[in-house]
Each structure stands twice: as structure tokens, then as C-alpha cells.
Length: 210
Image 1 (spheres, rainbow, N blue to C red):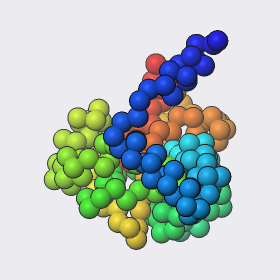
Image 2 (spheres, rainbow, N blue to C red):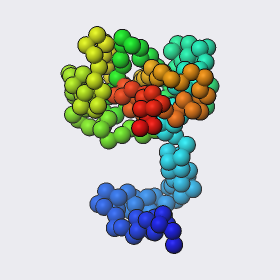
Image 3 (tube, rainbow, N blue to C red):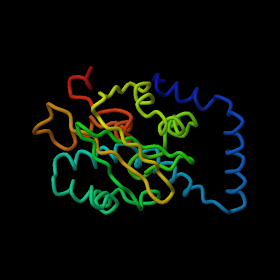
């Protein structure tokens, strides 16, 4: 038995936690009563595990870096431009893309709950949903960024954008130096989820490799 397979078996042998048990019981009950199709559940799980996630947003960013026309459309009508790449859908119907520059740094928060652009970033990370981030990102954005490893000089303006159920944001990070002539695929591999939320920058190739 391979090491990976052994790990997989051990993972499934672990007892479920309280919340997981409740979810499993609810799922079984809904399936038993014919209210939920197990195949539909599998399709939803597969969607968020393999098809939806930050890799989608990274492709959007890479396209904007290499295609000036697409970038203009992205900054003018984000939802329509993102749909061109095939990533439109629920929780991404109304979006605004915010461009970072050497003098302006954008970061995104949802102070009320955890509104997030699912089609391009997938489900929100735990820290994005946490009360400390949601409160302090507005009050002390530079302090939060510093704690997350991003130190900005005083001459850079920090703009904080509050997502809502009606409007969600995606940050277009600055393209790193040393990537001239790169393909979209290669550029997309550099782009992280945190950079598209605005709590990190996209690292130059050598730094990213290190």
C-alpha cells in the first residue's frame, strides 16, 4: 500500500467531530427522505474541491497582465470580463476589480460576515471570516497587513473595501518584475489568493521560488 493511500485510509478511519457528525446525519436524513440527490451533493463537493478556487482568479489576473484590452474591460465591468474567462456565477454576479499600483494598495474585508467572490477565489479562508480581521482591517489596516507579513511604506495609500452581499471585490495585484514575456499560465502560477484579497503582494519569480 502506498504512503498516500495509507494516509487516505487513516483519514477516513478517524472519528468524526461533533459538527461533522451532525452534518453527516443531516445529509443522510435528507437523502433518505428523497429531498437531496446524492449525485447532486457529489457534484457540489467536486465543484468547490477541483473547479472553483483561487486558481480561477489567478487566471483572471494573468490575463489582465498580458492583455490590455481585457484589463480595461475588467476594470470597467468586472463581472462581464470574468465571465469571458468562464468564471461567472453565483456570488460573483456583481463585482469590482481594484488595481494595485506603486502608490495605492487595496485590501478587501467583509465587516458584517464573510461575503467573498466565490467564482474566482472559492470559499473564504478562516482568517477572512474571523472577527479580529473583520474589525481591525478597517481600523488599523497597516497594522493588520504588517502582522500578515506585508510592510508598506508610508507613501503608499491603503484603501480598504468592504464587501457586501450585493457587491464583492477582487484585487488586481501589481505584476512582479522579471516576468516580461511570460505566458498566462506561468504568470498565474505566481498569483496567490492572499494577493487577490490584498493582504500580500505577488512575489518576483526568484523570491517565489525561494
